Structure formats: C-alpha cells, structure tokens
Length: 59
Ligand SMILES: [Zn+2]
Image 1 (cartoon, helix red, strand yellow):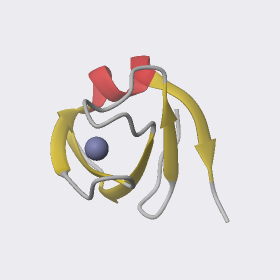
Image 2 (image 1 turned 135 degrees about the vertical axis):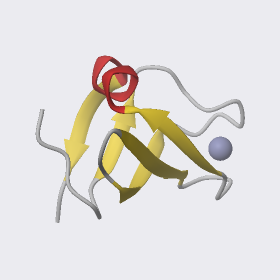
Image 3 (image 1 turned 120 degrees about the horizontal axis):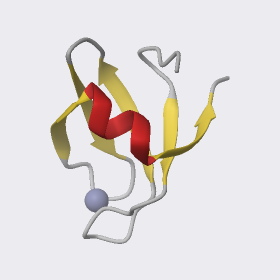
Image 4 (image 1 turned 45 degrees about the horizontal axis):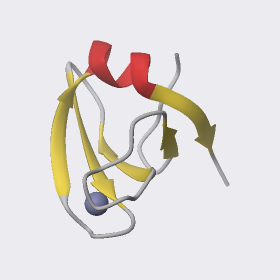
C-alpha cells in the first residue's frame, strides 16, 4: 500500500477519542500520524497501519 506524507487515512479502528481520520506526518518503518479530531500524534509500525487502513484520502 502506497501511503505518502500529507495523506489522510480513514482507519477501521478509531482513536480512543472517536476520531477515524489520521493525517500522515512521516512514513518509514514507523509511521507518524495525527488524529485529526483531537490532534494527538502517535507512532505506529507500518505493518500495523496497513492492516488498519480503510481508505486513503489524497487531495
Ligand atoms: Zn483522537
């Protein structure tokens, strides 16, 4: 799956705050993403993210 910085990811599993959309800040072995609802930033391993992506939104 091809994810780029600036993409917004709609996840199958939502953040504890209820947000389902995350902005990609950094890609690599670990992805850094920010919940667009509460602004929380998290680092997640690539394989874990790829399993959890429902949709990629790119402008
Ligand atoms: Zn959140």
